Image 1 (cartoon, rainbow, N blue to C red):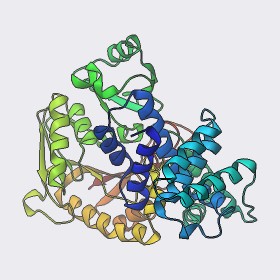
Image 2: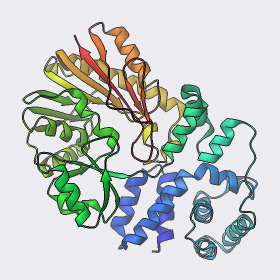
Image 3: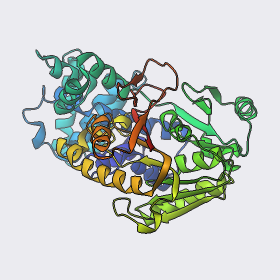
Image 4: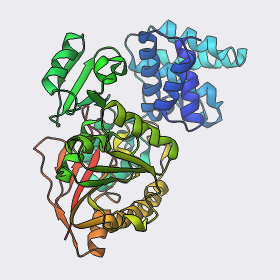
Length: 438
């Protein structure tokens, strides 16, 4: 199966069947024997087409009366082809069109003629775009976001910051790794990666981060296999240090899989103490255990537990708690662009009940004098500042400890002492609040 056919198979899984793009790609690569350049091309088509789907559909509507009546697999042929023609300089027009027509012939001759006609029409009018009068519609087309989501960001952040968010969420994420200080020295790992042909740079925000700009798959690197590093976004790297950890503490991570933050906590404890890593999904506990084993960590106890249900045995037992709650994920759209189309306003409202239940239970587990860090990878203020405000109203023994971890242009220090991180090429959108129990 050639690269474009594989890309279309993945797009069908994501856009028509609700799969996650990263998992669908991984599954496709398992089933196919592909060179690295082919994997790169497939990944580019998949992520690019999903990212710009909203804009591409608006363009298709210039040449087709009713986009919604096109077969869902056929429209993905058009979407991926227009993505290549409009956004990729390296793809010749004839290659994109001929491949699309050839694939469409598998459906029928009339389908191939339809696809050929739309694409030829598009090529003759490359600069033609839909016209919009309102700012929100212009931004929705320019950055390829659903109109409701653009309105949502404008309402919460204002038009200027909203556009900054849209730009950041469309950026191609850098691959970053965290050096495991239990096994490796930062400079040693940094220099060795350079020697092995990786193009690397120091982290943007975290002193433990290395940004990998170019090089072969990091999972095949000996340092990865030896547990000297772990793949983690820089925003996520900033969370665990907020806990003010000391050796021999008991720390809980209530929504822990795949274990990036739990392992970071264990490293900061110098592998001395206890880390209880809970997750509702039993099948994900193996990810936590595998990461801990590879990193040489022995103090993590991974258990299945529903964080929304109170466990009486855990009340008043934790010195520190990390609460990286399930959220709408609006801050990680640059890594999972399908979130643009899979989430609804209702989803954003419904998730808050789960978050509040988890916060309440976590507070019961925390000892007096303890610290709880509440974090999300969303930019929805209702899941962030509003949840914290509501929690403070209910709990007089809770106070916010002001966060400050440096001045960076994408950091917003909120009036209540919490931190919002806007997405850019280096970092996911994120939110953190540090809560002290009196």
